[in-house]
Length: 215
Image 1 (spheres, helix red, strand yellow):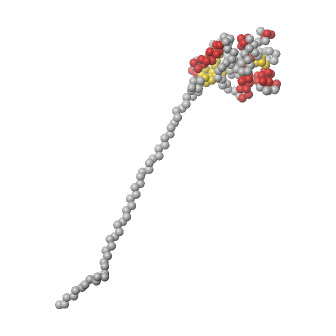
Image 2 (image 1 turned 180 degrees about the vertical axis):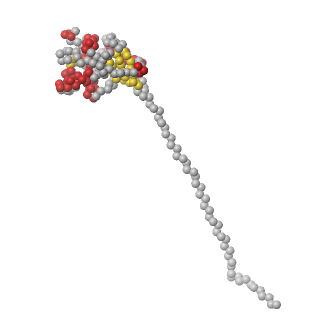
């Protein structure tokens, strides 16, 4: 039987292509860092304290009120005499004598005749008009008097303002320290003093300010 030999065609190339490997992309996501907000709360500042004391005097026990700052400084807000109309009400638990040490010394010196002016920090509550009238009292020297009309003139006010000036003096919360007792009527009469005419008489006599006709 004849034999047939099959020769491979050298021009034919068989290419085997491997399937492409899939590309795997791995994404690493870092966990979000939580935002931390720190709130710093400042400690509450110490509050201003309202305090009072009592000062014995020839006119009776004087009531002094004031405010004490966190640093310990005292500002006087009122000085009233016994029985005075409009005197502030105080709480027994708010009495503190130590902050008023300087005021006690100056008042003692005044009643002993060794002091003619006070050097205390004052902060009375009042309207701008009242404040202007009370400040004007600081310019009335020890041992002298002025009238309501003269005080109004010093403030640049017309004579029609004498009554408002008188009302402002009647509301003066710092008797003695703001010397409204040195303001008298045009005829020299002692009137319009919140602590009473008898105490006004005593103070002016103590200061040597009364006209001879009133002595």
